Image (tube, rainbow, N blue to C red; front, side, top):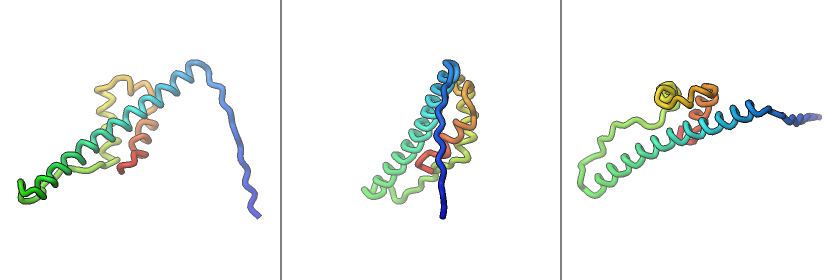
Length: 105
């Protein structure tokens, strides 16, 4: 007989911790949306080229673009930190996990 126990915990963060939690959520949302936007742009370009092939405007689809690669995207987070300084205020692992949990990988 398997008995499963469940523990519920309630945290009471102070104001500084609440602010850091909210910053982390916001930055993760920003990173997630950034990479979703990049993938949508690549998908749109591929669709346009494919449609041109079907209409006879191009002979074949020679698109050599890369699709979403989560490992390259994790490395790109470092470059984004140089551009967007507010990303340096939060934990880097949380930002990397927001890329990994992207539904496009």
